[in-house]
Length: 351
Image 1 (tube, helix red, strand yellow):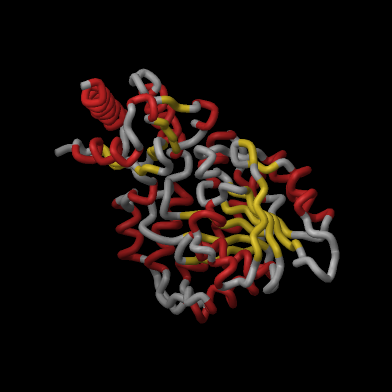
Image 2 (spheres, one colour):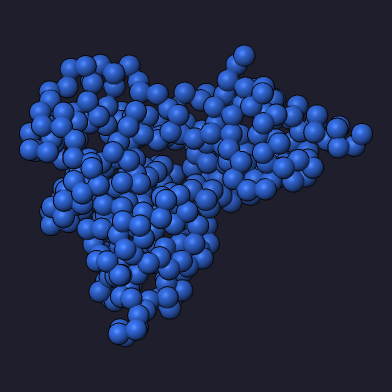
């Protein structure tokens, strides 16, 4: 049976060039700072995002936590957009490990209004935790893969600086944002004190993320990474495909965006399915199947039986993600299957 896996861009497989790079990568002990392949990736990542240094970490979740721990102290409060990945999907690590409080602010298309963020900053009072950091997510997953602009990032950075705070950007898909906005990724990363980006999503690497920032920040981040068990040895086998990704896989993200729009427009033609096209900016598509009479888990299960994989994220909402390995004909096939599923559900509901 043909399978079109739209659950996530984390299901991407490394390219042949990446596999060859792994085989031939010069290796050393990265905890001693002696893995030349890791060092090269970190230097490339820092240069590409306009920062002083980079640090290879195992995952985006680890990268975010390392960044928070390196810029706060136990008992501090950080401000997050209410639907952010850090708040929803990172197992409460900021509290469990960092001893940090999270204060959430609702956003529009994933971006909180700086005025609302400023209103959420705690007063300097012995009774209150100190607000020391604000985090943005770019692109924003739960908002539909929406991209935060350089102007928005700078506005938040200026606010943070005004109040003696720091700005972290969870840039798991920041290259998607740069491609969609047609801007140099440095403009999205520049205003932030720290940025994390994933190698293992749209960039198609098998594992890994990178944190970038100033020299002093990275020195602290190395210690936090070690505390979290992230000190790796011959990590060049992880870094090697990351180098290929930064050289070869960024521009092709536009193909994923085009396929996501093709998918979204096709979904709008299926009776009972709705899509907010304002959110379809990169490679994520959120669809609501309420009009079919099905719940999201019912719809996902029926589509999965026919080879189209997706994720249910709310009672009637489903997420689909385009990525390397998904072509136009895969989108067209998926739309055919999803239309059949919708028709079958409507028929059963009517009977």
